[in-house]
Amino acid sequence: MPSRVADRAQRDIDTQVAKVLHDLGDPGPPLRLDLVRELLKLDRSYYSSASSGGVLSELAHKVRVGLKQVAQRPMLLAEAIRSASLKALYFPDQRRILIDADLHPMRQRWGEAHEIGHDIIPWHKFFSYGDDESTLHISFQEQIEAEANHAAARLLFLRDRFSEEAHSSDITISKLSGLAKAYGNSLTSALWRVVESCQTPAVGIVGAAAATREGGGEESARHLIQSHRFEAEFKNIAMPLLLRAIGSYLRRGHGPAGESEVALADDRGEKHIFHFESFNMKYGMLTLGRWRRKSASAIITPDPGGLGDVPF
Image 1: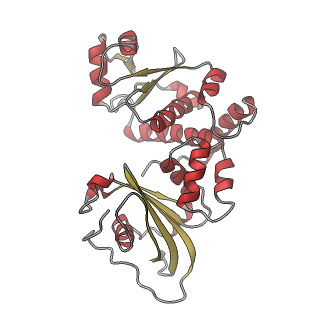
Image 2: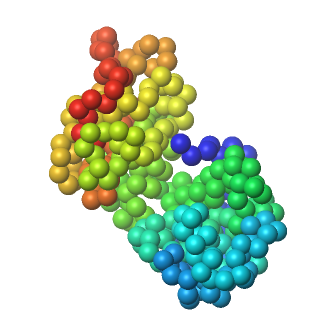
Image 3: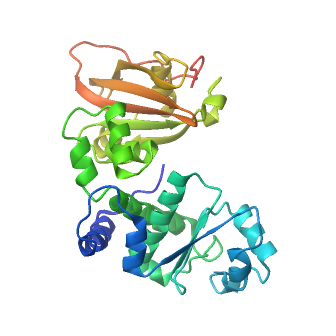
């Protein structure tokens, strides 16, 4: 699970995001990142991690990790990018963002917003854009990347505007899909944002690609998203239990994949009824679980044992 961003950092980041949106005239969705770049005087270029030419040839001699030169030749830079699985880079001295041209457009949009996040967070300017584990402790790497992701989400979802729209009526995956399109963002990022902004216990699961769902296993779910209340009150609920609950109603095939009420026990042993809904996309399964009510009867939650026959 991604690192939590400290409350103070969230407030400071939101101040920067609010300033950007204010200077753009508080636009409606979808946010045009070209206007954000123009405002911040940032340039964007594309590169291919499979190629050593083009913009990589131009920038090879300028990329450093801390104070160390990474590569003098573009071929070495391309290999460094591939080995580190880099999909976007930010060059603060040149006011330049690089995006992997091979990414899906939605992931390009998120990557660009993430790099803009690095640019607008004041304390990120003290750190090199190419730090690795030898120059920056891994826990701090995770922290600054989580902060950049937080900034990206606050930008792309126009601070609280998306959450207020999403929570104005009952949340369904169909509703989230429509809102995601209106904001120009992916359904996965919309699911993430709506769960994290939920004031009641809620959970989201981002599953593996449909082609690899057979038999469960470690890749059966890539991410568990929790609202603050779910994380605080349902610490005993682990991924295997949630996957078994989903497996009890899941249908194969593209599109809506089933829904059901599921009983989960909180950390005090009290039973709660959640409504779970799943949707199978071409590249993955998404599940949204929302708190409905306390259970009046002692319904037993699914066995938290092995994944067994969960087709997820």
